[in-house]
Amino acid sequence: KMFPTIGDVHLAPFTDEQLYMEQFTKANFWYQPSFHGVDLSALRAAAVDEYFRQPIVDTFDIRILMAKSVKYTVNFLEAKEEDLYRIEIPFKFHMMHSGLVHGLAFWFDVAFVGSSMTVWLSTAPTEPLTHWYQVRCLLQSPLFTKAGDTLSGTAVLMANKRYDAKRYVL
Image (cartoon, rainbow, N blue to C red):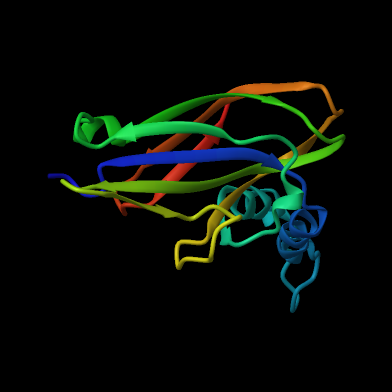
């Protein structure tokens, strides 16, 4: 048997002005024209790219979610290892709230299917906290949406040589 047997990746758009501004504030350190006599301002654009490229691993209140999550299922009994190096998750969200979308939130559930019972482990923000938390990926430029709008695209999760994951939103 393979454990876990099934994995569900969930993603949903979120709004979090405080988190967004916190990342920009960190990057703005590099906007200084004279830091001990050194002009750092040429590095600001690269710093913004780097801060917004990094996923934020923590927990959050579900009230920041702007639409119901989309679920992508992996059956580990059938998936080949190479299928997991790059996962493309198409999404189509029907926005429940108006406001700025600052990024996508991710979490997962896994099923351990045994011979007599199935046990689920969830990292959802509605469930008791685990050490995996949840992940939020920020957009450098937030998108304004209105309740009733449709937001669609593809989230691309890619493994790298450090066994980390990179993400792209297309």
